[in-house]
Image (cartoon, protein in one colour):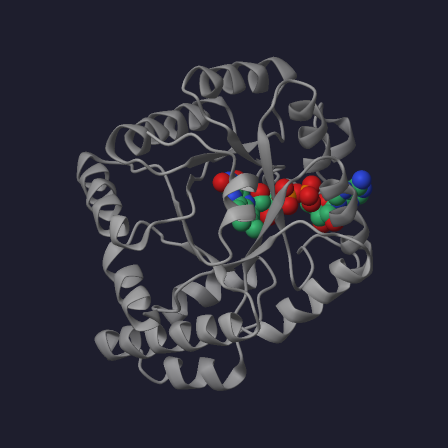
Length: 289
Ligand code: FAD
């Protein structure tokens, strides 16, 4: 079992991949996750991460899924932790659970407000924004923290510049690296990265890659989180709605080309949102060999 701080891994490795999973909901899903881990052994991951939902019961699912990762792999593991609507005592309990397992890394997130609630009162929460969670965790131990960043700006943010200010404040509160939300047009990422570097942010920023295998699904994701799909790509893949296998193949080719472009621009560490689908990721990684 490997317990290392991701900041240390990133300082030692200038290239490689990390992989994000969500907690499996069924026994079949858990089996797929275990198979996924075996497949990824061939790619020597930088680390693997496990998402979480909102609220206490969802953190327990993450904890169970983290136990699968710890039991079934030697990879460095990072659980995600969301704080919106949580109490400090909830967060402390979750952190204690991770500490006893030897976990060294936490992805510190605010999480989304409950669906359908107009004018949610963020400031009325014990943790209003991710920056509050970063500070809280920093005061309670020696976790290496990652945070989420948004190359096209976060969906709630009034402006890109305002979001940049909040992003910098969150990083300066103690994040050691950041992972971006998915994007499909690399120019947004390059501009975002340049902006942060020009403002003195020096931590590694890993591009977050979502394989573009099902354009309808990705479009739905993208519309709720500000990720532009290039018009030509949308047109090309959208035209293959009745040919899912061909759409998948073309989508994988698009993702391989996107990753190659990032690598050629010097971003040789990439984070994959796997959606727990080993076959797609395997095909992308084969294409990148
Ligand atoms: P924050 O950094 O708090 O930002 C949220 C918004 O608040 C932004 O618009 C920001 O500009 C604004 N803001 C920040 N500070 C202030 C301030 N002081 N005053 C006013 N406005 C402010 N969600 C999950 O539920 N589970 C997961 O596992 C998960 N994993 C993710 C992994 C990655 C790589 C990414 C990119 C996102 C993930 N998310 C996950 C989604 C995330 O929870 C949502 O995007 C959420 O809406 C924002 O979370 P945050 O941590 O970025 O929030």
